[in-house]
Image (cartoon, rainbow, N blue to C red; front, side, top):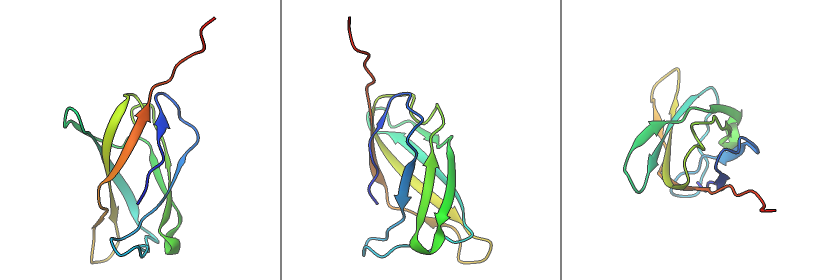
Length: 110
């Protein structure tokens, strides 16, 4: 599962993610409640994803990550992992770790 880079402080655009297994097959996440973690690769500090994770096409393994300010507060390289909780067993599902970059925001100088 590939994640697009984000810009520090940028809350748009939302990230559209497809939950893929190691084989490349998608995981059906219909009806799942999603959560996740972000781990800073430099400091090893892990925090919960603060933004909203909503299933958009469960059968296709797709969901949308609407960033919260805390998700994009720091510049750097991160490991992101998602969990999907289902109402019936087997549950939960856990994604492989995906690398994610948050880039610096710079204003134009006069």
